[in-house]
Length: 311
Image 1 (cartoon, rainbow, N blue to C red):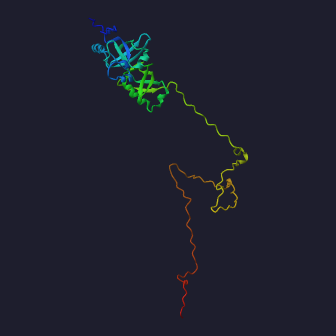
Image 2: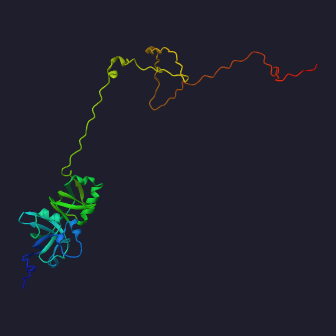
Image 3: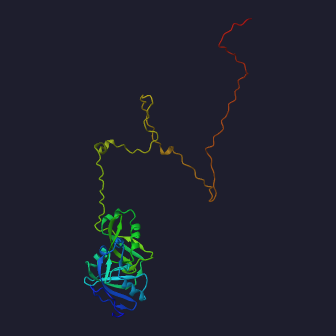
């Protein structure tokens, strides 16, 4: 008979797991999900951050006053590496737990290695920053939407982990650079701001400056430049529609400053009063009266056909 303070494990895998008050802590042999026996395909476990534990763990957890959802801290004591995860199901064999492959790589665990599993309480995430491990991640049209959809299969994030997400039958790895308010946070039902760092190995495209074209001999010849003599209206040459050349007319002489009439200011102007001055009013034309004696219908008519007139 086993004491109530110990788990009952598989006879081929003897482990001791102590249960503290409101705390779960034990060791398991860990394997990747691909080695999970059964007819059902559990490749969905590889797409998230949750593990599969044995039924005895659920029995012990149900007797403890732990906080839900269940979150665990995984530690490899041989390499002093740790991460955090959630639990997906309790269907593993006794003394064994199944982990996603990327999680085993972060913990530097081999198939059948020992991992310490402890129940923890984590703060809710408010911010996280990721660094893609390949520039191929930039080919995704909307990376934030893809990451948001992939994180639905995760329960928590740990700073320093390299997580793996699957998109369009391709696996993208992202390193968790920063998490707030703690180095390990829960992302279940949270409002989290996401930011991206430059991908690993990414280089900014070089911008080639265009060199100005060298001026030709005609442009550098000073004799081709016209002297700046001021603005002259209608100094261009015209062309005739019949093709004949037009006689050269002398260009108009420049205006003398004395020819420009200067306006007279309104010395009676008052602030807030608008005066309309209309100097362009046309003067009425004077109609000259005709002094000649005009007789109406006094002309002689003309006929196109001449007729002989009888006396």
